[in-house]
Length: 156
Ligand SMILES: C[S@@+](CC[C@H](N)C(=O)[O-])C[C@H]1O[C@@H](n2cnc3c(N)ncnc32)[C@H](O)[C@@H]1O
Image 1 (cartoon, rainbow, N blue to C red):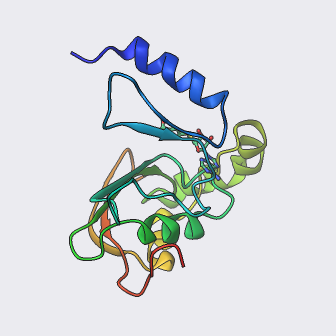
Image 2: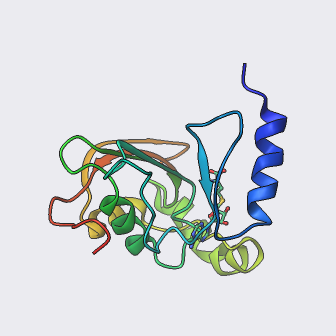
């Protein structure tokens, strides 16, 4: 069983130690890096690329979501790597998009979250290759499975 309080305390320690890579004394295969996700991402020692990159509910909040996705693609295995996105954004329905659009600036000002972003459009623009898209909650919640664009060179 995982001791979540220890992980929580470790996360707090990491967050007060911005910029460092830390290893938890108990969970040796987990490390936390506090950084801008669009900046070059340090790869784990003895590995060249990550097998899987999971990103959740970040495209709404990042200043440049396309750059963020391209950056994630750079550190993911080109042949077999997967990028999993759990995101929220525009709906299937225009009546709901109109509500999201009209309240978006106020919502973003308060929470730093643009809830009317075109998530599928952002992923397409990033060049990631989409393998699966599932949408829930009137189409506002997205589960996307993708893989890196082959043209992206690691940390270029
Ligand atoms: C809605 S929260 C989602 C948090 C978490 N991923 C989750 O799913 O519960 C959006 C997160 O994006 C983070 N964020 C915004 N800009 C970022 C950036 N440039 N690099 C890394 N994280 C960023 C914010 O700090 C915030 O924690």
